[in-house]
Length: 416
Image (cartoon, rainbow, N blue to C red; front, side, top):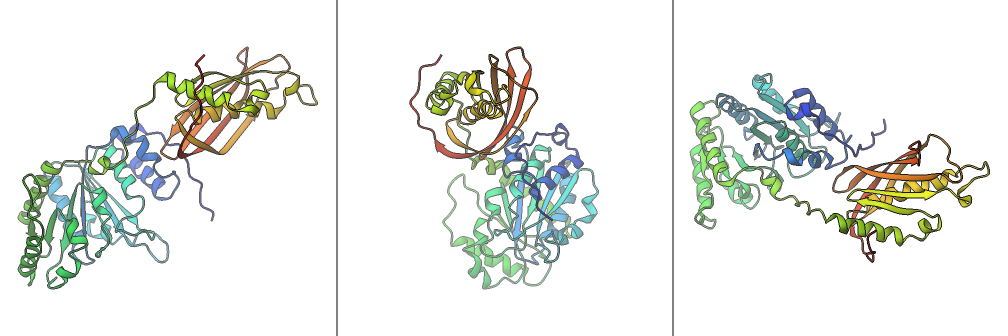
């Protein structure tokens, strides 16, 4: 079965912002299955992000991460929170999907109206997460969840991608690490905001706590205002231990804050002045000899929009005496090209579709107006309507561009 192509357009459903579970689940499925171009959802949700506290839990396989998350869910519910869990599982060698082992351990809370649990398969992605984890976290953040818990796949020394996504990072360590603390301290242990020795009721737990504290002494001493990483012995079956752990998480949140993943993202540049945009677009139109040869002129321009015009003459007619379809396409394509490059970054057309509603004849004044429908970091979609002077629709055109990131350098012409 062939893979469905990416949809580069995505509009934020109001029901998602209201926390509708079905709409949230549908958006996550679209992201995970590759139906949407990467980054489109996050870009559309930008204004709705930053509410949730993202809590990452990582550690070696068998460290008790899922059992700990289950216990934390009960305590967070008692504190009146809405919680989402993103559980990253190994991929099934048969189906390629998530193994769902984590969902089994959290099943008691899965049906609660204030809990949303989603398993993701790594699908070969390294780092302990799936490639779509961060965008899915954005969906859950916009849906109004107070805490989003990410449980990584069983991780080793180099699976530290959770550091980039989570606000607070818990590394779960089972009892009996012993000398292996020294072997892995340069990797996963050093990303921890909290070190938690799970199954603390088992023999060897106290020794593991001491080993981890000794390891922390080898680090540079925290300066004023810097978080001192605590080591907690926690038994998921003891409510007091879980409550103490979440109290410590809250202390870290108060110091470090939410939405750390958003701070690392590039800040959109301020929009250029309208006059500058128009000057840029006019310069591009003036620098196109093919456009000039057909008598096409640019009449209006702005960020993501352009209007061009042409009066049908003898050079535009086909053998039937009506305007050649290629001339109409060129008119629409010119508006498309100018609008998509109006932001100052070179945009390369990768897809275009045109329909013709009726014929145009000699003497008709045609106008093509391009409008930006959506724009992400790498893709943008435009609609172009070609109309006659009396308002009749001659043609409709849609186009997709790939934004290369290369700056456009053209001489700036005088504005009209």
